[in-house]
Length: 575
View 1 (cartoon, helix red, strand yellow):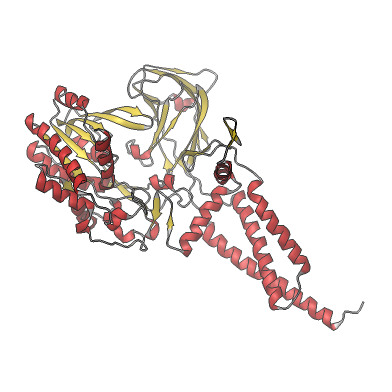
View 2 (cartoon, rainbow, N blue to C red):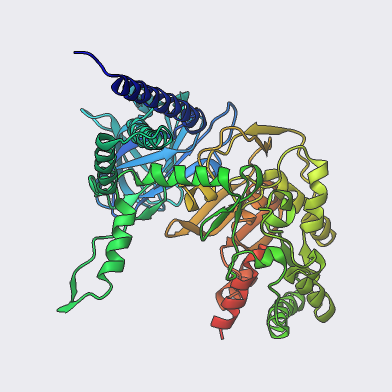
């Protein structure tokens, strides 16, 4: 059959459209592949079967370098939900050498078995080389691989003596990514076809139908597979439950809102879609945030404060009223008076917020409105200095100066806390004051060892926007551990910690938040004889009795400047 000239022209135009649409689609998909699919490290999975009483805390500690001590910075805690079940840990580690398993506080009988680390299954030979601590009895299981442990002591754990040397795997091209790429490619091709057809003045009837079908499929895709899990391990939280249409015999008026929350928690491909939306958003705009975390320059993360917009403390627009200043000053003065009357000393220490030290990485779209001299912390320090006998130690200037003294970072990129070098500066400044009243030798760090912190608290609070950081190096001090630790937990948090060092001098009582952890564990614990740490800010009558009965020499109140409103709230609720 002879092809007419108009038909030949149409076929040529159609061929050009197909070729150009395919070429444009291939180019864009290649760019997405390059930007979206870099290899990253996956957490090291550790699974085990645990038989223990409900609520037993199982905590893993690991090392990722030779001659390294177990540290709270390399630990993960899970709680047993029943008397018999499997626990799965996803350790944010680049490498796992040695493993320690803590089995809670006076747990009684605990059975651990069928432990696997990555692709390695713990063998009977591995179990034969464990080092028990505070364990009353250890009995190896016969047919199964594991052990039956019994302890009524405070800090029981087992450590595997033989190194495992497990390396984190690199994420490859997962099925989710392939599926999303195919969807993106189909949409791109259909869009390019329609655009080119318009430019070449062609009528794409068949393609219009296919495009509409594809669009309808995309709308239904999120509901094609609903996540039925109870929890989201990546976000460390429970997922929303399906709402009831009626409550107490009445129609639930919030059913629509509750259903929307349930669906948003569980729709198909939620995690990769949200994560990559945030990645794209970060490249297109500088405003990447949720209610807890804001991402600044070069991937630095910052915690938002308790103000309405989350930035008032950084902008210095949130200040204490005269009444609030007086409430804080009266509490500090009363504590100081109690100490002085009994020949003791009281020290008030304020570590700076991360955004006060690394504000060059703070989001540029959040401008500084008032100078730092007008910050609420500086106003508080000035007020206390003029109206009380307490001499507050605000560490901002010392830590800022430390940025030029130390090569390592003083705060984590993916966490709100200071690093060990940052805490070392805090220890040094505190020692200058405390040693005048209680002379001790200064603990000098002569060697720092590098390591990665793959995951910080920002990853837990904003998991859809952040990935594991296997690039940034931090440093921890090469120091011996001269003290022993006992802990009393409230949930997952060690509310009370007791440190004892037979080589140290003096006894201290710390009221504190999480910033005191490495301050004490790294430095003061190796210098002082006894330290009691309470994870709160208010002294109680029981505390006063404990301090006198145990001959505590001095009290330290450590509180992060951004947490000061919590002290105000605690004082208001105590009345």
